[in-house]
Image (tube, rainbow, N blue to C red; front, side):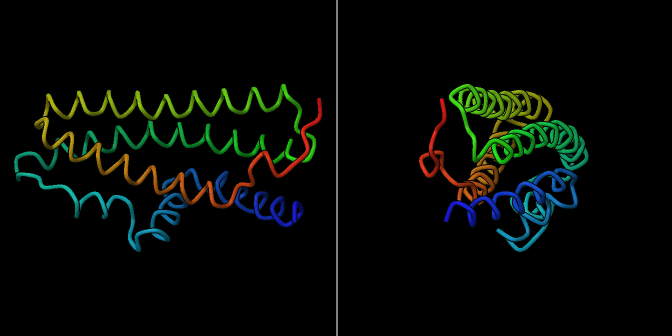
Length: 158
């Protein structure tokens, strides 16, 4: 059973490591929602014509930073896969602390983007976008969590 989980994890990590470009990450969102993320956001947002250009410029800035955080997440998942069979207390400590840092970076990016959008567009438009992003990110996390074996499924080594 552990070997099956490890095989799935390795395939997932390979996919995620490759999937941090826009094209591959779109595949994950498409698999969940049946459309590209930008299209999904475009259908969700209620923008006045005067807001459109400013919104998409801020969206592109956001996406650049979000992808960088995604690369860090992929690297952390890859590190977990590499250490999976011989996970030590030190490894687990580093992996979980890195996970906390990555999650914090997402929250900080959402807050920063909200402030920019609220000033440039409106607080309602900014909240609408951030709410959609949080929802999509939670769905991505759920998909990842379903494929990554829990630490409790292996024996910890001191």
